[in-house]
Image (spheres, helix red, strand yellow):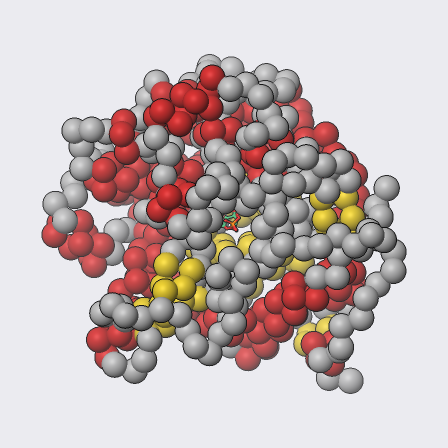
Length: 505
Ligand code: BGP
C-alpha cells in the first residue's frame, strides 16, 4: 500500500491562544488586557475588517467602566482557565504531539510595568505545560498573541513606546526562565506582520491617542520596537538555553495575479513582499532595501538606537512559523473586480476557488505554494502553526457535529503538505490545526465562527453550558494521527463517514 513516509519526530498538533480561550480575565491577580476591551458587535459586518479592527479611546473607556464578563467575549473565552486539564486530556486522546498556546502577558505582569511577576499566573502556566508534558505533548509557546496589558496602552504608548521593549523583555525572560524545562519551542510575537493590518490587537495602538503624529509612522515605529524586542529574546535564548528553538511568525496568505498580465504579476509580488519583509528582517537580520525605499518614499522615519541593527543582524530566528487559511487574487487596477476576503485582508475573487461562510477562499494548493516559496527564500525549517476553517457548526439533538466541510478542508490541506514534504525538499517541523476547542474569533469576537475539533456549547451573547462535544473532525484527525509516520495515500480518498461517540463528559 502506497504511503507518505514522514519524519517520526514530525509534530502533529493543535493551536489556540490565551485571549481566545482562557477567560478568567480578572482572576488570580490578572490585569486587564487589550483583549478584554473587545466584544462582538453584531451591528458590524464581520467581514468589514476596517470596522472590526478599529477601536477608539472612548470604546476602551467604555470597556473599563463595565466590569461584567458576559458581554465581553474574550473575558470569558471558553473558560479554558478552569477546564484546561479536561481539555488537554481530550485533545491528547487524539494522539497529538504538539499544542500551540500563548501566555497572557497581563496574567504574569498585570500592569506590564510591574517589578515583580504575579506568582499565580506563573504557576498556572507551569501546571498547564506540565499537563501537556504528562501526555508527551510539546508545548509551542507564543509570548504575545494579540494582547498587551491595557496599562501599557493607557500610561505609555504601547509598542510605539521604546520602554515597552524593556517591559516585554522582563516578561519574556521571566516566563522562559520559569518554563524552559517544559517548553522547547517559542514564538515571540504572533503574525508580526499583522501590525500593519490591525495595529490595536497586534500592538495596542489606538489612532486617536496620536493626534499630532502620522499614524502610519507610529505603526512602523512600533513594528521596529517589536523586532528589537524579538531579537533580544532570541539572543537571550541562544545564550542562556541553547537547546530552545525560537522562531518568527508571519501570516501566509497566498496572493495570486488576477491574470497573466505582467502588471498584475508585479502587483501580486509586491503584496507578498510586504509580508516577507517581516520574515526577511527576522531571518536575514536586516531591513530589505525595498522596505527602506518604501519607508523613505512615504516619509516614515523610524527612531532606532545605534545597537539595534547589529542586535537584529546577530540574533535571527531558528525557524519560520506561519499561519495559512486562504488565498486571494490581486490586480494593478482592481476597479470593477469582485472583492473577496481573507485573513483580515481584502483581495480580488478567484473564480477557481470556493469560499468559506466568512468569505475566505479555500485553496489547499496555496499551502504547498507557501511552503515552497518560504523554504526557497530562507532554507530554514518551517512550521505550520495555524491552519483551519471557521464555520457555523450545528450541534445535533444527539450531541453530534457532522463537520464534513472541516474534514474536507483539513484533509486537502494536509494532503498538499504531505505531497510537499515528499516532492519539494522542504524542512517542516510540524503542523497545527487552528483550533483546539471552539474559541472566540480574533477578528469578529464571535464564538459562532467555530474552528475547534471540539464543540463548545456557547453563543455569541455568552449564553451556554460551556459543555464540550467532540466533532466528526476530531475523530478524523485522530484516525490520521493513528497512522504514525506512515500515512496511506488512500486515506485521502476515503469517503467521509459519521461517527457515534460524542459527549465528552
Ligand atoms: C489568525 C490569528 C488567530 C486566529 C486566526 C483565525 O490570524 O493568529 O488568532 O484567530 O487568524 O482568524 P479569526 O479568528 O479572525 O477567524
